[in-house]
Image (tube, rainbow, N blue to C red):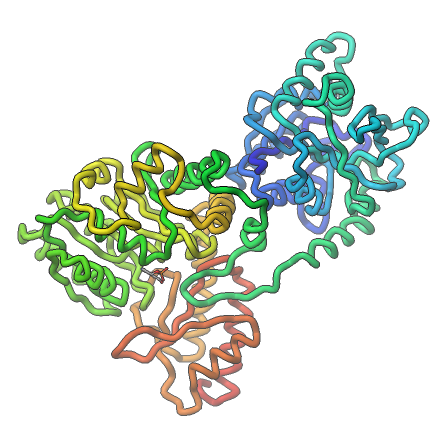
Length: 616
Ligand SMILES: Cc1ncc(COP(=O)(O)O)c(C=O)c1O
């Protein structure tokens, strides 16, 4: 697993003259997007958590880019005009923690190259291609055992070229350290050293540990853009080829408008396709630890939240909380205003807990005053409620109730299965002690991981609570994981890899950015509902913007099953209602859904309603 990448982007790009006088080369645009931004996106999509960019010339462009992606880290080569690319790499080196990708900033490339390097077992390896005839080739000479011996732009220097250097490599931190050591020795006599010189030196002279293997893809689509001719061929020849190649690897698109599992990006789907691993290996323990830490940071200040992972669905997370976070002598108030509040009560009944149900309308907002009155009775030690009732799309006032509970010493247990990762939540500020979610809803991962978020002080209190079950016990799972970085039982390995990828993508989009995108899709949907004269079950101002329950039209021409089947033919999946006393169908707008796709869906919906004379 390669978690970091370094992009060397300090250079002046002088061969592109006016185009790069006031702009770094990486910001040349092809099809409306800066080439370096496209590269950064490809790196994130291949599981890179952090892209370190070594800047120099016009570094402010990179500062603006870093504001868009939380995973970008910048370091500036102040001396960029006097050094070569190695000077920039030296500035980046202290930030590198482990094996990493090394790239030049002025590249366009087919991302299959990253896949090939990730999946090659050799630790130091550079990407090479067949002949490009670009006019700026760096030829590779290899040793008898196939590793890098020499690099040169002069064809006559190289006896029998093993290929052309692309400018994408995978290196160990140790080899980088040796490259830096070599460069430091030559600061005086080779101030303008290029990174290729240092790479060739360590590979050829420092023994097997630092040998750099060569991965040649003969017909690889890539171009480094150093001058106008390169730019021309990049735009007209190479870029179209890259797009064609990459489109062949796209997974058939299904737009899931059901309330989860949600539509995922292709990079999340592909994150499952990786080398087999025994989950007891440290490498996998590190993945789980990172996942748990990053999830905790999304819902509270550093060091205050623990996220405990279980193999299971959202209901498993609910069951963990209800069975592990309530002592025998407690009395719990459970708010029921939909199917999932009912489920919390059902779990409480299975465990024979002492509880009372606070019943509320399934589509009208909770009567906060009467809930507060009940909570003030002094009868309750715990409150359990759902943040976002997925049954109807009703958003419950959890922060307000949470604060009220904490002022009275009542522990709060919240099912945020369909709220987390879309609605910004701070468990400390919102007074949530325990919170459940899952890997397959707004976080946009695959099904299989149950998430239990715990405020640390509340978690500590559960230490001596009765152990009512075995697999789903919170304290046991937490302490075992803390000690070993392993789960007690076999974890869903591939689901955890996709959850890791989902976190990388959410960190870059941000929770508020995601909610904004979801809201854009919701606005398109409700506009169509209005246009069609349909009615929604929940008053607009109490809706989550995530799921909409629409009252079914009364026309005899309407059939949910027909609507569903026709939608499915157009690659949309819609969902039936779940209420006993109202006929609804539900449209969720969570997951990797873009506003354009919602636009397409509403056109489909309008056509169905109009062609069947259901709505005008
Ligand atoms: C609020 C809420 N809680 C719990 C669940 C149950 O999750 P799962 O079906 O993953 O067990 C769901 C599922 O949609 C939900 O929306």
